[in-house]
Amino acid sequence: MAQPDKHQQHPSSKVTKKGPSEQPAVAVKIKEDQLWQDFQSGNEEAYAAIYEQNAAKLYSYGMKLLRDENIVKDAIQDLFVELWDAKGRLGKVQAITPYLLKSIRRKILHSATRERRTTTLEETDLFIQVIPSAEHNLVERQQYDRKRQEIREALAKLNKNQQEIIHLKYYCRISYQEIAEIMESDTKSVYNLMARTVKQLRKYLDLYPFFWLLLSIL
Image: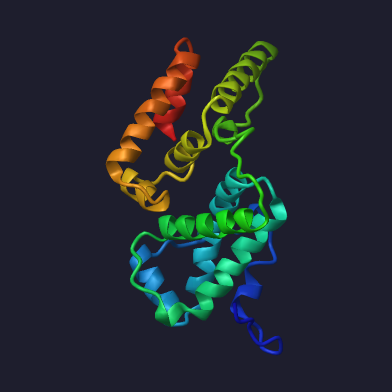
């Protein structure tokens, strides 16, 4: 990949030095198609907004694919540098998040293959953040910890494709059609994969209705 001129400040330098958890909130969310058009026209604020709205999701998804923080962070930085450099040649994008997720998936899997690394989705923390951090009394805290552990154990029994589809659907909150594009599959196969995943989870969590409430509110 061609590197930007070191003597000229590249717009990506304004957004890629921060960790994904440090991103400021975007005050106004522009419609994605308009945001993408503004970015393609060279608008640095639109470019920064795309980064701010998606960096955390890309990082989380990347870490589910490959437990290597350096590779994931480098892949995200490279992706945004390449986006800026190629902005005038990119096609029309109406759903930015799925587009970026698909791009980062290819980058990380390519890096893993190149370095002969095995991708993994183990020890997923998918649902940890959906429980509010309000104080609980001791009994509630113990119940919460037990339920959280049950979820961890159930998710750990899924294969990597099943964990990936759960992450994309319930953390990234994208459609089945978009998931199919990201996973380079077809919609019917994605529906079938989710059905098998849910069926398997029910075997482990059939006495745990709170889990399904979690899925419904994500």
